[in-house]
Structures are given as structure tokens and as C-alpha cells.
Amino acid sequence: MKKAPGIFITGTDTGVGKTVVAAGLALVLRERGMRVGVMKPVATGCVGEGKRLISEDAVYLFEAAENEHPSLSSPFRFRNPLAPSVASVIEKKEISIEKILKAFRELQRYYDFIIVEGIGGLLVPITKEYFVANLIHELNLPVLIVARGGLGTINHTLLTVDSAIIRGFEIRGIIFNRMSRVNFSIAEITNPKVIHDLTGIPILGTLPDMEDVDVERCRFGSLREIFKERIDLDRVFGLEVVS
Ligand SMILES: Nc1ncnc2c1ncn2[C@@H]1O[C@H](COP(=O)(O)OP(=O)(O)OP(=O)(O)O)[C@@H](O)[C@H]1O
Ligand SMILES: [Mg+2]
Image 1 (cartoon, protein in one colour):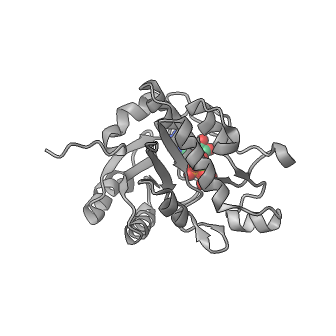
Image 2: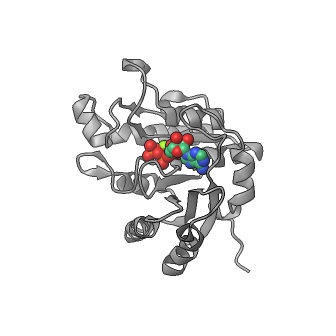
């Protein structure tokens, strides 16, 4: 059976906008009539209690994609806002990579396209010696890098690109998130070109800071429309035709 394709959304750091970008993608694909599966393999900093621990990231993705298999989309949840390997030790709950891979394969059976959101950046440890990058390798997915738009992003983005290239990942491109609504800084204006010139990686677009978008309150606002307007979707899906 043909396996559903997908994409892995990684970031240059935690809090850069991976969930917002993953959800934007899911909203657009759904509008195109695709069945989209979403996954946050390990979520830390969850809210609620015990078995009812809720990942706000997973809920946001789940709502955007209108999914039906919460245990596959969010197989491991932890309360502490820590790297998974650390939260796992503190909360005495082991993370099984096999279970994550199995959940992913199952999602591939139910949906046409799978969007996986990473945890922090590429070198966040999921277990003691297994990083987010190892998971990308095993899932065999192309990566999309979400980066901040402003000062500091050149270094973070180049480190992430280097790390992805060394591991042989297919990098679909970079999205700069949360650009100023007005009065762009000089860094915001110049960063995309500087990073493109240094890496040759496609810049897939920039997203502004959107007042009506909020992961924690599960608000999508104008996300789908702005995503369609500002992001080069064909390149996200590797459909670019070389002329
Ligand atoms: N373009 C945007 N406009 C407005 N708010 C945004 C935008 N991008 C992200 N945010 C907000 O910034 C916060 C961090 O974004 P997000 O949760 O997408 O980051 P993340 O990289 O997924 O973080 P994590 O590493 O915790 O998974 C959230 O509160 C989200 O609502
Ligand atoms: Mg997130």
C-alpha cells in the first residue's frame, strides 16, 4: 500500500511558531479537500491532570485538521515544560520511540498527508540518546524550518540548516514567522535574503504577527487566508516545477 506523504515542521528554537505554521498548512490542505493527519509526537508543558493531560499544541493541530485519532496524534504528554528526555525522567513515564513510529504509520493509513510538529529544535533529546533529528530520519520526512524574523535568527537558522544538511534531510524551505506588523526592523527586512544567499535554501514566505491567532486559546482567525497569501505552497509540498 502506498504510504501517505508528509512533512516535518521543525524550528530554530522553541516558541518560534511551529504549531502556527503546522496548523496553517493543515487548514489550507483541508480547504483543498485533502484528509490531513497531524502529530505532536511528544508534548511537554501540558495542562490538566494525570490521564487528562492536554497538549495545547496537539489540540490546535487536531482542530485545524479535524482529526479523529487523538491517541495517535499525541501519544506522549508531560506536564513539565522541559525537553522530553528530562520530563520523562521527572514524571517517571518512559517514551517509546517504537510507539511513536507505530502511531505515525497508523496515521498514514487514515490520512492523505501527515504533518508532524517537532519538539523545540533538531537537537532536543527525546530520550537519553535519541534526538528530534533521529526521529526525522526514521520518519523519513522532508523538513520545513520555522524561524524568527528578527535579530538573532541568522545564527539560529544557519545552525539548523547545517545540522539538517549534515544528516541528509531534504529541506523544503524556511518560513520566517511573526514579522512586525508595521515598522519592520532592518534585521527583518534583510534576514531572508541574507539567509537565502548563505544557504541556497528556498525562503517559502513570511508570516506577520497576527492579532487574531492564538495557540493557547485555540483561535485561528485569519491564519488560513494569510497563509495562502504569504506562503509558497507548491514549494512546501515539493511541487516546484523547474523551468
Ligand atoms: N504569526 C503569529 N501571530 C501571532 N501569534 C503567534 C504567531 N506565531 C506564533 N504565535 C504565538 O506565539 C506562541 C508560540 O507559537 P507556537 O506555539 O506556534 O510556537 P512553537 O514553535 O510551536 O512552540 P513550541 O516549541 O512550544 O511547540 C503561541 O502563543 C502562538 O499563539
Ligand atoms: Mg508548538
